[in-house]
Image (cartoon, rainbow, N blue to C red):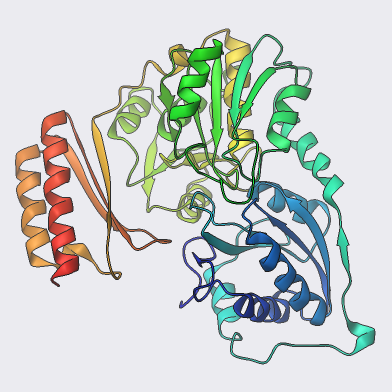
Length: 444
């Protein structure tokens, strides 16, 4: 596909495809495929300043095509998925570039069930992008309505995912919303459940989303947890579908460690059904810790869609990525940072254990992940010089480590991951491979 990547359409604002003209044509094409006889669409967004113009362009395209529009404003991506289904919409749209800087933005879709579109449906939408924008006769035009207050329904849903009657009273929680889509709902859910909250990253100005805060930059959260003597910290990303946490010692707890806790210390002692699904980037320590406890572990390709597909195929309910994109399918249909964090908090309350104690049994292997910016997409392993360096690093690791090279699905990056039992070999190996990839990009 030319426009849809691993998570919708995404790019630099003002540069194709992230232009107002494209958004208008995308809305028209999506309406033709997802609501050919009219219907209703829910549009939500994060806090990027460009969200206003894309919201208006999409609204115009949908209304012109005869689709009624419901505008809910800033709300986490999983909240849009939930509310799309809850409000009986034909489909939902999220305007967000997730963890990317504010200069980027994106547009992604959910179907009527709150699930991401299949490749086939995305391809069908793409095939209609060159058609003229559809404008129905006046009597068939859609209408638009703002429903900002409906976000409380999503807040209630999040709170309902922990045991009935459970209170978070006694927990002092620092919540970092990355100045993004969760800045209203996440603090309110935690406070309503009785927690004492210290909010940071909850003052968006349109340009500070993911800027030195949130799950991509948890250093501020780590300092704040220690500084205010909180029991735990929670960091969401810009659109609220990822989470990392910080324990009472100020240490970062990533998605692999959170999956370990959810898999082994489930509420009321119940383990998730089926195998746990990670990705090729998941730490080897997670796999070993789960297998030692009799829990099957599978690896999917990177991307929550791939994790979801493998979970459905294997009959599992828990999966996710190191970045903190965690799927709890017994609670919701898509990755939800707040809901995942609530499950961990509930385990802490039920067990009386701190986050540090809960995660102590999983030993992470040293791992280095380097992002190499490239001028164009290419397969690094198809380059003979890169392959030679990879083979040499594998020889040094001597069977006690892993190497993963993959192109980012949303940015012009090649991700180089090396992990193993020897931290020095891992660091040197990652550096050598990254240098080879960079050279191959410059001199193909």
